[in-house]
Amino acid sequence: MNCSEAEVLIHALLDGELDAGHARDVEAHLATCPACSAKFAALRAMRQAIVAAELKDSAPAHLRARIEAALPAPPARAPAAAAAGYNPWRFNRRFFVGGFALGTALSGAIAATLVLGVLRDDQQQRITGEVVSAHLRSLQPGHLTDVETSDQHTVKPWFNGKLDVAPPVIDLTAQGFTLIGGRLDDINGETVAAIVYRRRNHVINLFVAESLGAKHQDTAAETRHGFNVRHWTEGGLDFWAVSDINADELDEFCRKLRPALQPPPPRS
Amino acid sequence: MSADGDAERARRFREAALPHLDDVYTLARYLTRNAADAEDAVQECYLRALRHFDSYRGPAMKPWLLAILRNVCKVEFARRTSQPMPAEPKEDEQAADELQPWQEPQLSPEAELLRRCDGETIRRLVAALPEPFREAVVLRDINDLSYRDIAEVVGVPVGTVMSRLARARSMLRARWNVEEGSAT
Image: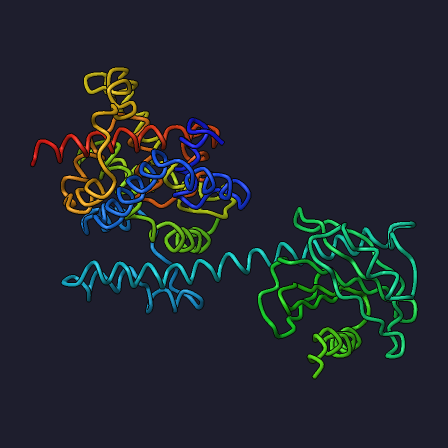
């Protein structure tokens, strides 16, 4: 790397926007070039000074009030009971006039949590729909499995190199859920592992991916279009099980599967 | 849609959009350089955002609002021909090119000067940057947006964001040194 290549990239390094490879290249250049290295140090000092100067303005209270007044009033019914009694904006206008900056920061944090709650639910609703659609697609002739075998030691390596993660493949045949294979599927625009089980003549799809909107360790239950859906997160992976078997049997499937997902205790 | 539906929508909008009011107002201040215009622009931005909230598909609310605000400001300034936005001042860009070798200060004294530079001076120097460089610095260093978000807000490729930021900071650094030079 020469100085003219580094000229723009040192800013991206400063901003933490470079991938590891480029960051290494730029740092290697800085280590050998006193001029670029001095420039980088000055830019960093300047950026620190800008951050320290806290140049972000607080919107004046009358502007906030004007904007709020222009919005339709919040509803005065059940879920809104929380909003009415707990409305962070109203709260900070009435009680935090003196400490307005603090009130703003606080209410911002509260509101951000509320927003997160909303978005997360929206996302889960959407993914539930996609999971059920993927399950239905898989029931079309010839779509159920890419690798068809009851041997977990064949299914697991089949996923190698096809995904960023190594999905756990658990054989539950002895527990009444026959492993019949695996395939790649597409949910929410991401390629995910689908591990397929059979219970009598019902199919269970278990979708596994790194980030698929399952936010809780506890198994969450949903029903969509008559299909039962269970999802949970564990060990950095999100799991979604979907089937037309009844809710009790799908719960049984989760109860038997989940302990087997735990990593084996370290050998002493 | 029922009144309750509207109110529910307004509640979601309130919770999603109002936490970014300070960010939106800050960008408006730097784009308009005028408190009264900034307030009008922010209010117009929120009204437009509410109108288009149904088509909003997330996930990042802040860049979405800032993009709307930016459009409000650009349209407003295009309309006011008496007060054009200083579009592409070529001399400024030229003048702000790299520091001349004899101006290149030693590292530690410069870092020292930068530390001594007070908030008001920094604010004035940032505000004095010509567009589109001012906008790039504000979005990155004050609004704390990623390059990708800035590219979306401004509507240019990420590479352009990078070169504008590099240019903006070189200008800022040059003026900063001049400022300190005249002060001492």
